Length: 95
Image (cartoon, rainbow, N blue to C red; front, side):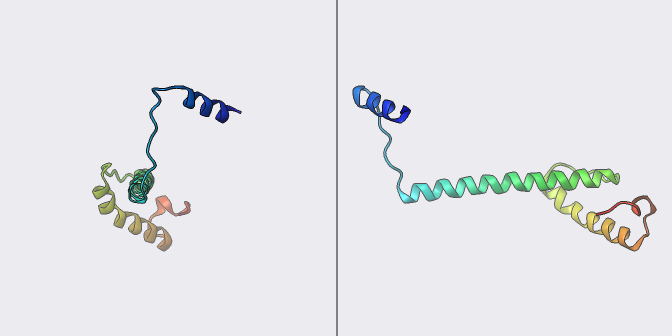
């Protein structure tokens, strides 16, 4: 019922402005921007998760994406050391 009332109200008002329909090019540009924004948010979440896990082992990583990429080998080293049993501090934990 609300949609019908809004349509009637729009028809009655003389100063109502209508928005033109977006072209396929405009829509594809918006989709591209929304997708990029989503990927950046997901990347940030993964980086923050990695930083948190490394911080549990005393490895402090700056909050930039570049610093996280540099720290990724440390995560691999910790995981390999845990599997080999060479780090007693994490031998009981599970990755």
